[in-house]
Length: 475
Image (tube, rainbow, N blue to C red; front, top):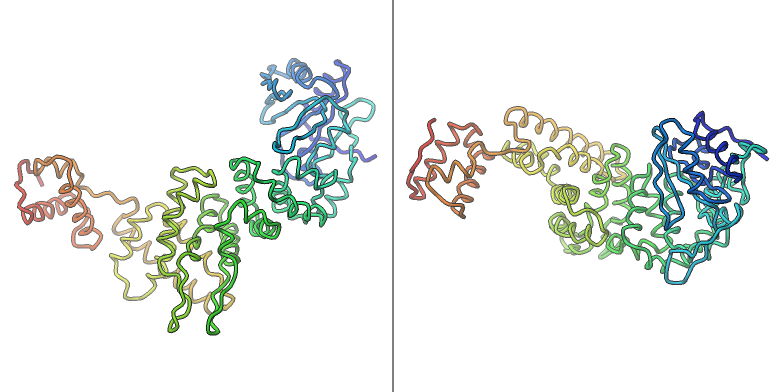
């Protein structure tokens, strides 16, 4: 049997010593072993013992420096402790059985073989012995090592049973394939397609957690293509599936917006690991199916898809159980504005148009420009080169105007409080109207965003509206 060298970390020897004192066999198992073989960094160690995992955790804690606190989860029969920046979880070997309408198994004590059988994939069903007789020996009952060399995701038991028992494993199969750049074994993939409806018993939070991990992979489009081909995407994200397909009228076809979206997502993934910028790529054209029209003189149009898409973002986030906070607002902003920079490429574009874009995007202008560049997916090299040159021109203008006008996160120097005090007004529509007129004047370049000039302009506007100055601020 093959021997695996464990990392230079005293915790392994301590676990081996504690297990020997308790008279139980112990093994490092699962994802830590997989990542060790694949030379991927991992700080999460799972230890399985043939006996009481909680007792082993407490014994290990007593033998480690500073006796780290043991967190016990009696309901699950597990315990966990932190040693330096490592997290070690302990559990007794178990076997599981499932009921039809739940992914929560009935659990009973079992052998190491039972424990390996309940693992989701062969690459996660590997163990390393921590026992004196065969310390460091690789336990590989299901050819997980061979599957890693072949770059294959495969289930240890019949895949139909594996996925029917715990349907979240279908998402995990696609997630691991995407993260690792592996293929899914044909029988395993067929079982995902056959059992896809079972995903309905899994909570949306768990589904979305796996989906986000797919989105954060180096080439996320691969995962979405697997989700689409298996039929899972139709169940977990039907709005995205609506982007798929090409319609032709009078010889005019539009591009397949599903594959365009995936290319934009991959383009963003090459320049940013930000989850929410990647979500912006996924949703930037989400309203195209709803806004698609055919006009004989101009062909296919998607007028207003950016505004419609922005309005759709909150519901999509709510349905997917994504956070309804500043992350959602960031995505909504980028969806709404993703066409704006390309409209600014003409030489005749005014500084006020640049100011407005800076005003509306604030600190998200760099993210917006990254999305816009990613949105160039034409196979026509001449067209791509022209678009990139245009964006270079826009970014140059943005920098110039920003340096002179300081409009990122723009706030008028004249606050609502100053307006109310000047004209003795209570909070009202009139105050809001005056603020808006001032903002417009600053964005149009009529007035600088400096107190004296802006306040003088406010007094003029107030006079035109018949307002009396009650408390004039000194200029």
